[in-house]
Image 1 (tube, helix red, strand yellow):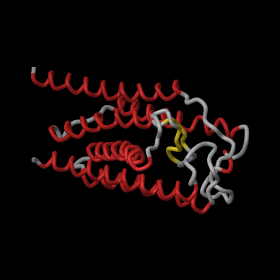
Image 2: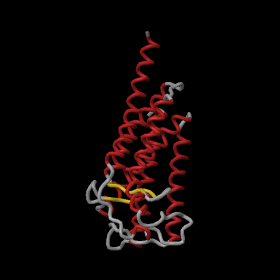
Image 3: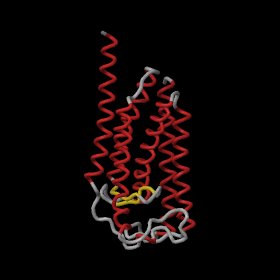
Image 4: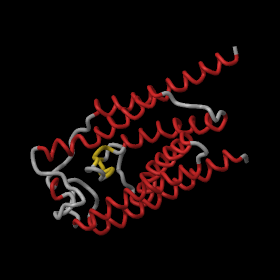
Length: 239
């Protein structure tokens, strides 16, 4: 096994282990605050625990960034390893929750995905679909940078990728922001009130598919165009 495959294997194992770790922490939280089962409307969580959850999520991202930084040999490859680790971590988080709890019941089950800067809400299929895009996309960049140290992604393609990611994130925050705009102020780490108290009656009904798929297809287009441009440049060099 050459070095790149060995490195990839360790990053994958690292991300799977992180996914299991994350799922176990969430199981502990559900046993404490949702003993009868996790569902909307959400039960309020003490402000101190809510703040700890925000710090835990931030620490998780730092760990994944650190893993990608250690694995990669260039700035672009480090970023690609981070994306790969993030996608596998998130995907296996749900896989392990299903193994341990038989939850989610389906890919259409709603979940709280993240808390920074405000709660992200969406059906489970949405983050899983993003993961299934991020894995081959990051894999492609990892192998391209391993073959050619001068491999780059153009500014236009970066713009499409980042813009698409921001739009997808907006789709996850959309329903929460829409709800609190007519009710209360969003919770933050400086709040003294309980986490989820501001959405104590909130039951998600519809996911903004239009916004989500706009961002998703922007990201798809970025990857495909980058691949096409790279192949075109290789042909020009050969001829």
